[in-house]
Length: 198
Image (cartoon, rainbow, N blue to C red; front, side, top):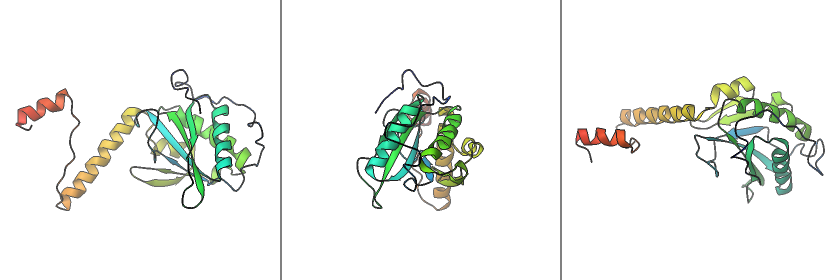
């Protein structure tokens, strides 16, 4: 695994290389699920509002490691790629790809999906993606990705706040006690003190 977070986090222009040694066109055909997820899993190298986590599902440990190797060698804007340590109930493995959350990531993901066609024989128009919080599945296009995925830390935090508000409203309407707490900082502490809440 590589971690190029410190010096490669502002340019998602694709950096092309040949397929990994030992990995040839079509080697991962029928092994990769044409649905990837976005933000389903937490980043292991940074905060969720700063790091986007793309997850692929693939049959077999060795093919998963091959995909990890391909991604790490092909894109210098990928911060980290890794495979799950064990298989899921259906025998598949997960491949996690961590990328800085910034607008140019859409270009990089689009190029990656096009490039992966060489390995999987899955054309870009057959891919789908699933966003989480709230969960939504859509046919993959770069435009739809930009529309549904928060591509800046502020957009991610705004989406989280919006989802929390929706949940609070549903709880209130259902007569369930709302226990969402504001973050602790100087501003919220001053409001609590002024309101007599400790």
